[in-house]
Image 1 (cartoon, one colour):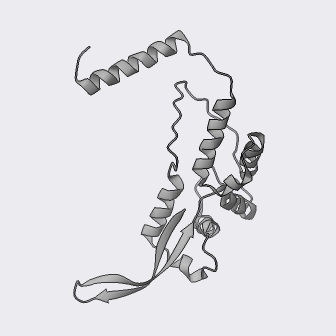
Image 2 (cartoon, one colour):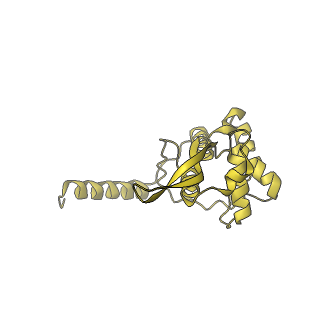
Image 3 (cartoon, helix red, strand yellow):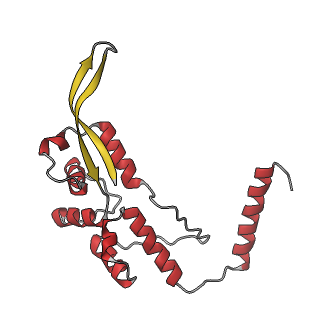
Length: 180
């Protein structure tokens, strides 16, 4: 969850000769499958694409991310550049300690991912529906982990093992400052 302070009224501090926030509104936001699903219902297109979103689409997503009840509409009009930067950073955050070391070159998946596809993955992998309120990137990592754990073990080829060993040896040489 992201908590932001939206500056509503600014004042001038004569002692420091700077503008200061005199009044603000605190708002909690969550980038989740639930908010993504609501956005797709309204705009009837996939959210998770490389296509640029209009300012209206971005603003609506911020509204749909909001957990704080009864937020006055004028609060959204007062979101600062710093607030929007914090929201963008939060949306793109990893939000998990899990990393997946897949040494094989990945194939580009051309499937268009929508809320319904993610709900299908959750159903197929027996992920409880309360996870739809998690940060979306954390939920997607859980889906990846479940898929990897359920997949049959693939053996690495001799060439892949040799490449991995060369890379590890190069990393160690660099780390220790040796030539071999």
